[in-house]
Amino acid sequence: MKVAVFGDSISAKLDMKNWTEDFLTRMGFPGQVELFAVPGEDTSDALKRLDQVVAAQADYNYIFFGANDAAAHHDVSVADFITNLTTFVTALGADKTSILTPSYVNEVAIAETHEMLGRSNANVAQYVAATKTVAEETGAKIVDLNHAMTVYPGSDEFVGPDGVHFSQDGYELITSLIAVDVKSRELAKTHV
Image 1 (cartoon, one colour):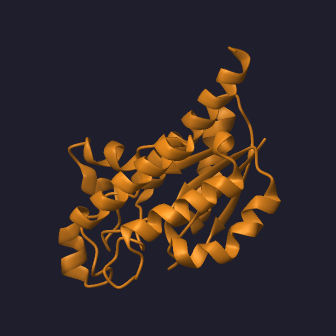
Image 2 (tube, rainbow, N blue to C red):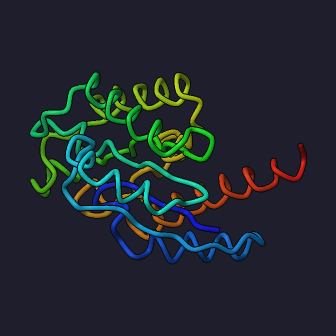
């Protein structure tokens, strides 16, 4: 089984591949994960790479953008974000695509480090809602990462010192959510 992760710098880290593969193996559904992720990109930038993800012909696709789209210095409106995500889902096939909601950001860390300025949870919330809209309108599945991060009282544990990129706990969370989604899709095939 092949799993494609299409995203930005958070998805580019090798932990995303290795830990997702490890969780899948432990759940009894071994698979190969391919990362299609470029640091600093938003959904408008990623349109140029969509053909590479389509050509991979993965069994399951995971779209994970929003951290850069929601940043003040990126020029991706919520409407453009919706259009771009819809283009991704349409090209990849809604029946085998899940969209992860944009992740929580630690605004205190961002203010202290001055590394990831222009990002706030208020802005992210608009892109979370947009992600859910696209999933509902296209039939893609949603993996509500933002909710999983914010419902936990120690949300800051999931992000590193810059307030945006993931800590080990963050990678364990996202990769386990992807693996559980793959497993649920595989089990649904046998319970039809």
